[in-house]
Amino acid sequence: MQLVTRLLLRLIVVGSVMMSIALLVTLLIARQDIQDEVDSSKYTGQLLALLEDFNQELPIERQVSAINQLNAEGGLRHFHVALFDAEGHRLTHKATTAPETVSTIISDWLLRGERMAPYRLPVPGADGRSFMVVLEPQPQSESVEAITSALLQLALFSAITLALVIALWISVRRALTPMSNILSGIARIEAGDYVTPIQTNGVRELDQIAQALNHLAQALTIEHAKQHELLHRLQDVQEDERRRLAYELHDEFGQLLTAVQVDASYLLKQTSGQPALEDCARAVVDNSGSILTQLRSLLAQLRPYGLQGGEERQIALEQALRDLVRQRQQRNDNTLECHLSVTLGQTLIPQRLAVAIYRITQEALTNVMRHAEATQVDISVRVDERMGTLSLDVIDNGRGFADGLSQPNALNTSSTQGIGLAGIRERVLANQGLIAIETADPHGLALRAIFPLTTAAEETLRTQARDLSRSAAIPALS
Image 1 (cartoon, rainbow, N blue to C red):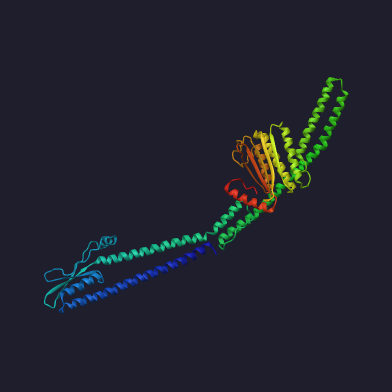
Image 2 (cartoon, rainbow, N blue to C red):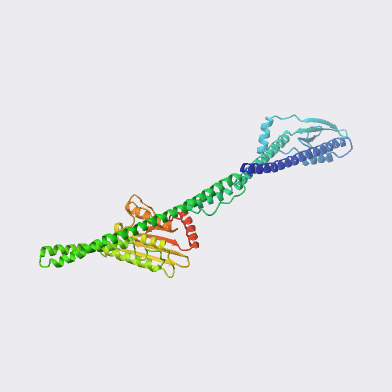
């Protein structure tokens, strides 16, 4: 059903109910008015009967009391009955003056201050005395009745209008309630949840929006999978290129440098006793040895121990990380103190994830050595077997965020540091992980990454990514 049709049907139902109530109230008011007219006729008949009693020999006090009672009961509409004797003395009570209210003020305004002359009717008594019955007009009662009727109609109209407004508000709110479902779905898509579909609710327009968003989520799921696959292939290509380069360096430059070192050693022996030539040969031996040492270090970075093949052994990752830390400390002349803690237990780390952990740690150490001006860095790799996750923490005591990276989790791709962080982010993204970069206590930076090892952990991290994305605590990267 269309949204407009649903709203119109609800308004028609509410309008019909309100009109029925208005008709019922109008009929009740008319019924009361008719009853008042009937009562007025009855009291008029009683007044005529009283006038007829004047011809009978009855005490005048009884007639006066009857007239006062008739006036007090208020059955005579729009006039008051007064009885005067022959000398003009008033025998009955005066008409009570109504207190000044809004109704009486409006009534006086409607009457324009006019006063109607009383009607006098001489009535002879049975004892020969003359009496005067005076009908004193009271048009204010009629105007007050008209004002009261108008006010009642106004109140009824206001009540109907208010009821329609409330009904319209409730109807629109209930009709648009499914929008919260769509908004929740949009929030899930924005946070990276493309799996949970948006449920339909029977409203044609909203169902069309929900279906369009579900199709969008499906398309994003496909593109997201392609992105992950592309990142995996890109990293595989990078590792293959590093492996090929390592083979070429080892096979070509390594053999040549070894030959140069052998020849230089021979020349050193042959030039014994010739100081100039001996110093030159010794320099060649030292330089070639230094080049070989640097080449071995470069080969270790390009092709770390235990991560070259397809094996999945946790000892390979731990050994590769320890070699990396040792090499970096040697290159930094031991001015940077590195602490490494690896706790993997019996968990088998997939080869692709192990390579990602190694490369992230490698890039993080490079950033610390180049930019942080730190004296200490703590590296922790641990597996939470209960949660099925692997976490990596790299915490230094350096100078913290640079000018180009003034906020946590920001990526400044215009600088070398930003490019390194972008590479780290891509590796985390490719392995369905989460990353946070924040200020360490008391100063420095803390890079924290967590990766799922099971399907359940992957779903848990995806949920955490949605929550953290809404609170802007860390970016959702998967």
